[in-house]
Image 1 (cartoon, rainbow, N blue to C red):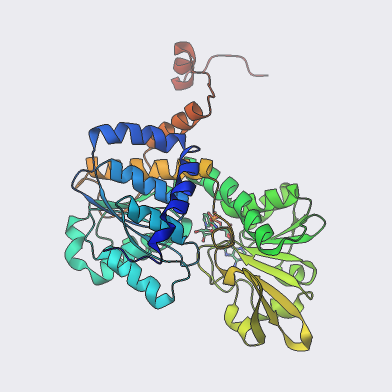
Image 2 (cartoon, rainbow, N blue to C red):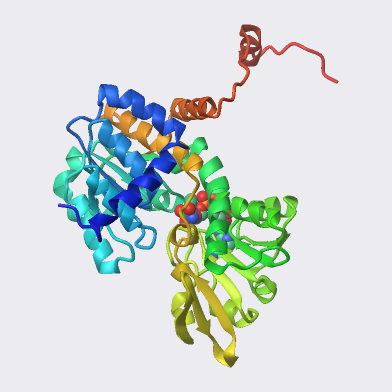
Length: 418
Ligand code: NAI
């Protein structure tokens, strides 16, 4: 039996799902194929992802492909109650509601794990690690899992290294059709969508400090420039710092940036990135947001030591520090693009979730042969998703001729240098 907030919201949720479906050609193609063959017939699939419309559509595609699907949210603030209601109406089992307490959230993930899945889709590694900790009796029956994000892969690789990972997990995050588009363009756009919806303030002319210049940080910084702000990047990796510099951004340590920034966005996957000494250096009315997976990048405990928080607007908390300085924290320091907006655009998640569905199919077809480790996305699946996406966009590309292929494969290169 599902656990959701309000079943009467189902129609509003279905409207949202129908909208994204129109913009997800890769999933639509896979749905056509798999609803005929039903490759997941009789199998239990457990999903722990941000529970909004795109995720819901993927869950429905898997159900059409024969799976019994159970789903929970990977973040209490990103769960949308109308989407949960719509899924239940469509025959998917759901354990999730918006703004669940930590205890409720853990219970929802627990109930999802307790279904004893054959295949798992995870975002952040919570579901897979819980199955290992609390349900050892299920481990042998799991064909494999697929992990959506950078932070989850770090945890899963640690499990592999410690020798405790009990089944193969596909590194969906590391696929080209994932991070080049989802982390960069998806996060880049939706983080600004979240910040602008939460604050309704102008971005142009402001000093925006981006912490972490990985794939997500690059997207956030690129879109900040496009909106007319001056971008400052703080990094710990010298290569990424140099890349930010060559991309035209200012690079400096956070303690310097703290004094001049108007908006700060953490997207590192690391903990304790913005902390007490930085708050102390900030200007009055500095705005802080996080887009990294967990709400650990901005030191909320230290903020709490002052006065506050006081909710001044939906998704905006005011903290008053010593001397009366105000700091505004968006979405309680959780993923701002999912808590204050609807996450990545549907066209982007089309590719990420196309990879997820194909990963489960691959894990099923290769069960017992992949080892107990994090495995790389087979290049042919990346290529399949890219081709389906190009088809959906009605874009055609050239192909190598036979002669060109031979030339590219040959080590005896012919031609004249300069
Ligand atoms: P990445 O590994 O490509 O980049 C992270 C960057 O942060 C690296 O360049 C690293 O050197 C830097 N970094 C680490 N600690 C730092 C510190 N203390 N100060 C400054 N820089 C630091 O990772 P990616 O893919 O960019 O993901 C970043 C985070 O965002 C992860 O937690 C990931 O799970 C999450 N994510 C969030 C999404 C969203 O929708 N908001 C979407 C995809 C990923």
